[in-house]
Length: 464
Image (cartoon, rainbow, N blue to C red; front, side, top):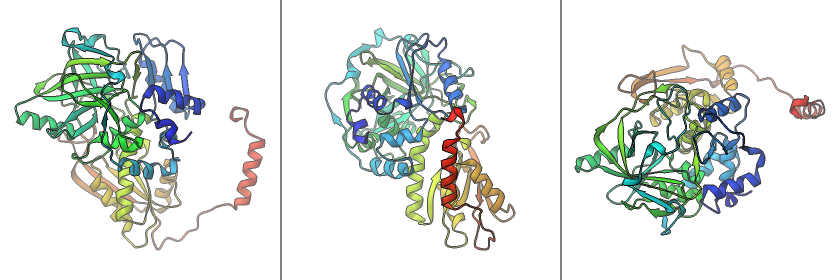
């Protein structure tokens, strides 16, 4: 199946049908009833421990009247397939498509507006939400993409967790203090609340676009068009006319009130810890809408592969492009799951002494989330933690090959950061260097081919 097969329609429902037909082995359809919505995340964790990352479709979860789809982004090979490329070229393909900005097209009507309910008919306590971890304060929306527009109509997409605060309001966090935070502050300066629409669901490429790292002047809805290779099809939200995807499943429209703060959290974050660090914002819902027979698209929180990949693929792609443009000796970049968003491995082919350090310094300066960067030679597999640790063991001298920079802004969700969110950053040069004496062991290709043939004959029963 080519990329066009998965992007011919921008509807998540159509995507699931197309992907299931093309790769039935990569979509696990669970018909058995689940007694607790927490079982969804528990199943993802159990699968990951066994090296499994299939997309999951749940038909029967106690208390959830809708079909639930999750784990869509847990496998990079799957994301690459959707983009019509191989995993090796994922960064390049994402950046190329994301950079081809296409304005959204207003199609007038769409499934998301099939059912519209005004304030008098809203009771968010009835909306089905999943509890992901035992430590979460409440059931949470994890896949909510908030759409906001500035005074010129330039849009912003960003993910924000949300729990029910009252029948007509969500408690949410703008903890990234990114573009949505700046839009809220601008509205506050005008003496106004910020008008927003939160959507749930949508094609995975729209969801990926919401994680894109772009300047504030760039509308992520244009990025979604680039990823699709066609303009994002949008409709106007019922009250404020905000342009939202026509085929998304749920819509909540209202305002974020800058001066109002409510309790929110703790919530299982990407650090692997339950976090109660929050901006404690109130999202007052004035309109709800949904399509008929909606699907509840979920993102598994915590330090799941899905949560990390959804943010990391755009971040890695941006870093790889910037580094390779500035430093031709850079071969590849990888943010390992083991490091949450705080570690990065960079594969280099240094031509001069100090080049690896220069590359690491650039990474630490460009990405405020990073705390540790390890540079390795181009024969070290940076997608394998054990290979990187081997390079540190064999090539690295602590007295000579590291440097630390302190007092820099980091992630406010980092439990080890200061209350102001500052961290220190570490660079480890595990390249061999010009004076390194040693030859890496290896085998002839003929011997490796014969060994592979023998193993195919004598494979363990569980691997056949």
